[in-house]
Image 1 (cartoon, helix red, strand yellow):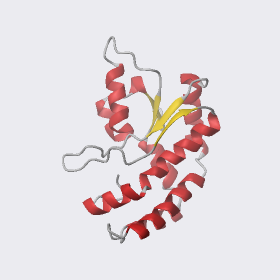
Image 2 (tube, rainbow, N blue to C red; image 1 turned 90 degrees about the vertical axis):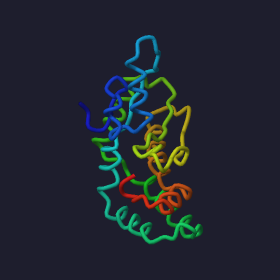
Image 3 (tube, rainbow, N blue to C red; image 1 turned 60 degrees about the vertical axis):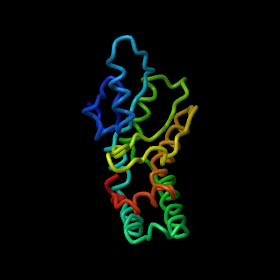
Length: 175
């Protein structure tokens, strides 16, 4: 089994912690006879964790979020922008990018892809994170794929997502 990528046939509801709700549901659908699910893959939470945890600067940026008032929209906007810019400009480590590119080549490098979040904490009994992260459609090419993966990861720190987590007591490091 790959560490950073799981193909739809490799996912199901038991994969929720690795691929989130959308990814797990795509795997469930794939296993139902007669349902045509296009080929695709999920980049695992392990890839994101290994991407961001190699940086002490990222940890410091997250520390700044811990004390922000959920109503302080200007501060949220400034810190969120710094985090998003940092993530979007951080190189993806070679083992992660290589596995993503291999999956892209295997599933069809000639296709256009959707790069979207599949959060592991979406739709909890007392909270819903749906629609807080960005979705990118019609992504073509190796470099565009990697750029939009970083943008998708960075969108975990949109102003609305930061404010929602602060207001509802969710740890930015755990979502």
